[in-house]
Length: 100
Image 1 (cartoon, helix red, strand yellow):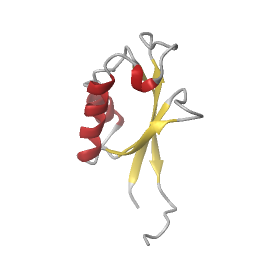
Image 2 (cartoon, one colour):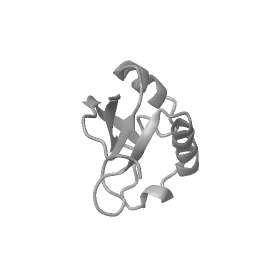
Image 3 (cartoon, rainbow, N blue to C red):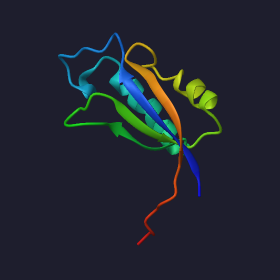
């Protein structure tokens, strides 16, 4: 079974709470960055947690280490100002539905 990391991203100090997630400054650049990580197979799943836009976002990441994840996410145009890494935890997948 594969080992992954669960990464929780919290809203940063530049987040405009009056605007929806996709209306935040720099959304297109952030979305392109995240799409590229997904295409590379680094991000397996990701999105907001909670109703509507959610508060935090959760990513399932396939990476060598927490340090590697933090290094990659530091290149996100939203890093530290719009989104901050709140936690990175190893996750061992023991259960998986069969395909089909």
